[in-house]
Figure 1 (cartoon, rainbow, N blue to C red):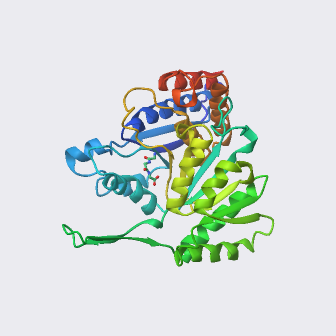
Figure 2: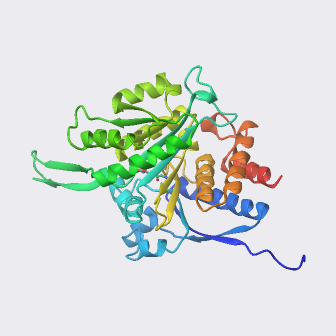
Figure 3: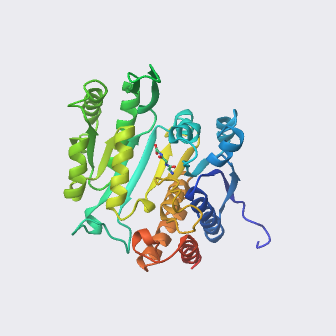
Length: 361
Ligand code: GGG
């Protein structure tokens, strides 16, 4: 009967807008997600906002409270804006917020898809939409971002600093398996593994070894191996030759920025920090940073935030809504409703309003 209200699935989301344009685009993403839930029906989002930011750090001396990670564990997913502000050294802000979350919540995979959206174009000459469709799988828990090392003989011309990369067989094996599964799930079933194992002769060689071992279980996946320097050239000159890519924490961080720029703008690229075991919440964030130069001006591109939101919606089990959101985003870009970085003339609010209307129709 019509008076009986359908019970909604409730997805509890921790929202951390962070710094700079992270605030603008998180506001936009929350608005879109609420419209999506209301329009499609059957589920709702319950947002809790955490004001963990560089501004607050300057006031109170901490990014997250001591029980911050415990608080986050209570949620189904985390939506993150951006971190980094000129008044705080970047290594303090990264290690105050985003890196401890990824590491402590076992988010050992960072998935970074890249493709040319409808109505947008690559800066590469002759690169059509079908020529660039990649997924970068970034190892997200160890490697060059292990945080190990130290500085000695400070205040001397002989200061020594070490930055130790830690690679473990368990860490490599689990990211390789995830990458092979991703490659297998895509039509081309092709995986390119990136290292620098000619110059770095320990951890990178272990990456190569484990890659070939795991490859034996995936005979249906075509494989190849690249050195990271040559990989940048291949991405620019032969984008069509690539599909799924797996790389270390640092290499994939760099390659995914290049990938996003080659697909049109860093402003469109999403990322999913996943704990594939689902024992902890996963975290979704656009790959771009806080962009202090345009913060608060209302001109940030919200597409990377919307795409990240769509990936979060998919992760919590709302496939149809995720597809609907991405369709709405691409219908809007196809109509030329875009921010300046994509060659358009709209601002954040203009694109957000257009995507909301598209969802509602
Ligand atoms: N929204 C992503 C963000 O805030 N990025 C800042 C940054 O530099 N992150 C480094 C990383 O992703 O490891």
